[in-house]
Every structure is written in C-alpha cells, then in structure tokens.
Image (cartoon, rainbow, N blue to C red):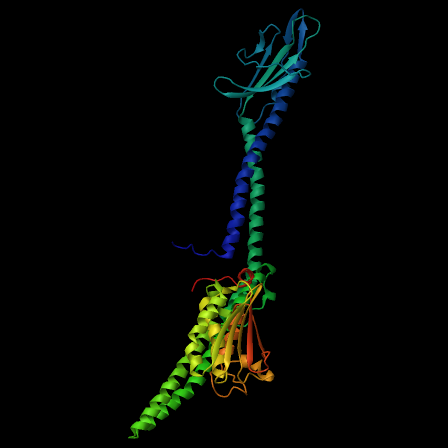
Length: 475
C-alpha cells in the first residue's frame, strides 16, 4: 500500500474553504436563476394585465354591437428594445373573435371565483408565449357571459431581464466571494506565521537540544500539539539519559575487572609456574562469570527502564507458579551454602498483569540477593499471598540492610555498608525499575524474627493491573 503524502495545513484549509464555497456558488446560482426568472415573469405579467385592463376600458356596446376601440397605449406598455412579438384577441360571449388574432389560444380554465383574470402559457405557432385572459362584463345587454380579452407576448424580453438580474447578482456575489477568499488567505498567512517561526527555531536547534518548545507563541489550537511534542521529547530525553548512564556505568564497571584480568594474564605469561597458571585461570574464570552476570544485569536494567515499558508485552501471569518455578532454579545455589530455600503460598488467586520474563527476573534477583547476602546454614523463604492485592515476599536471616541504607540500595552500583563487596549493586535497582514498570510497590523491612531482611513487592490483581498499565505492543 502506498501512503498518500501529507497535505500542508494551508492546502487543507484552502481546500476545505474553497470547495464548499464553490459548491455554494453553484447552488446559489441555480436559486438566483430561479428567482430572476420569477421576478421577470412577475414584472411582465403585471404589464400584460395592465395592457388587458387598458383594452377592457375601451370595450363597450353600441347599437347592440360590441365595439373595441383598441388604444395604442395598451400595447405600448409591452414595447421594449428587445425584438419580441405582441398578440391580442377580444372574444365575444359566444366564442366569436371580435378583433385580434383568432387562433390565439383561450385559457384551459376560467378565472378563480372572485378573480377577473388568469395568467397562463401556451404554444403559439410552435413558440412558447405568455398570456393573460381578462373577463370584461358589458352591461346593458344580455350576452350570456363576459367578454374575454387576451393579451400575449413572446418571452425574449423576460429572458433578457432574468439574465440581466442573474448576471448582476452573480457578479456582486462573486466579488464578495473573491474578497472573502483574499481576506481568508491573508488571515491564513498571518495565522500560520507563528508556525513558520516555530519551524525556523526548531531547525536552528542543535541535534542534542531536547528542551521543551515554548507553546506561548503559537495559536491556542496548536498548543495541545506542542504539549504532546514536548511530552514525547521529554520521553526521548529520559531514554537518552538512561542510555548515557548505562554506557557510563558499563565503561566504569567493566574497565576495572578487564584490566585486572589482563594484568593477571600478562604476569602469568612471564612466569614458568604451572600452579600459578591454574590459580590464575580459576580467578579469571570467576571474574568472567561475575562480568557476564554484570553485563546481563545491565542489559536487563536497560530493558526494565519504565520509560521503555510500552514496548513490552503484557500478559496475565500466575505469580505463585512463576515464583515456585524460579525458586527451583536456585536450589543448587542454596545447597552450596547449606541454605534452606523454602516456598509458601497464602490466600486466593495470585494472577497479575505484566511481562513474564521480566517478572521472572524480578523474582530471580530477589532470591539471588537473599542467597548471596544470607548466612551459611541459614534460610530463605519465598512467599506469595493472593487476593485483591498480590504480594511477593523474599525473606532471609542474613546480615540485612541498615535502615539508613534502605533508600540508597535502590541506586545503581550502590553496596550497603553491611553487605561488603559482594554483588554488582544492580539487583535491587533492577527490582525497583521492574516494580515501577508494573505499577507495583516495594518495601524493605526487618523480619519478625528481628534478623535479616524481608523484601515485599505488592501488585494489583490482574483485572486492575491491566487497566492501570499502559497500552503495549508485542516485542
């Protein structure tokens, strides 16, 4: 499918203004033409009636005969500079033509009660004509009915007048439309001027400048668009800031172990001591494991960033089953330190909405921290409580975290004063970001036993979580 190129705002406005205006002009021309024809017909019908009245005034009975003294003024009323023809006919009560054109058609119907005249049209010698028939009662003799006076004319003058009225009206309306279009055009240019200035200001910015755009200089109707662009730019700034921090942290955290491994290997290569080579290989292998774990955690940290959460797939997860299967993966690690790793469930359903892989990493980081910082021969309990809110708890009986450090341990690469140098300092930072992405809350507290640390993460139930989480798309 080929997408249609975007049309400029100016072009859209002109199209939406001019097309309706042209349509209105066509409709208005039709109605104006009808009105012009009606006006011309009304004017000439009155002249026809006046001419018939003038003839009727000079119709009388003399010595038992009807005499018509046709006045010149009666037909002069219909004269114009247009070459048209005028006809008349006076019909006696018996139907005989007294004077005029004998074949001039009579009206199909008599005048309505209370009226003396009727207007009608007919074909006369294959040409349309306009006629008026006027009844004239001649007193003094019983004639069996009124005398009918008919006056007719061809339509050239009517057409000329209607065309003149139509053209004059359309010229005035066309001038008004042109004037309105010019005013709209200049108004459009003036209204779009702030957008042009905004475009020039954005083009003049450096690529690294992601500061908000000032929406006060643009029209009110465009401010919502600018606000949306500012929000989008702010998200990009946060993402770039997170990437910059990740790159800086990665370069700092990986440079030292790589340098140490390089130094150890160079030293051993200069020695001829097989036992030293073996110990060095064991140390380098352990360093590589730690570095691999660090890289995995840093990649997970980038993926768990709340600002990129809309790119993740949301699904309904049984947190109890996920926590149980994840706990089984750490049985071997717990046995190495003789730690009793247990799993408990409480309450009802433990369904939550989220990303399955990221939730597994959340549980895995908590269990790994508990085993790493727990005491040899101690215990670690993974507990899931269902209901309206689903709670995940991971509790150990190790050294714990001092209350003053509990807010700081969520920072990247921070190691609490009681935790020594073990770990990368990323575990709880990753957990915190994953909780933020899943609209979950996290709390660090001392267990009821008074020893160790209990990490509690509270999720909304699946139905409420799906409504609260942002819309997602498959990865």
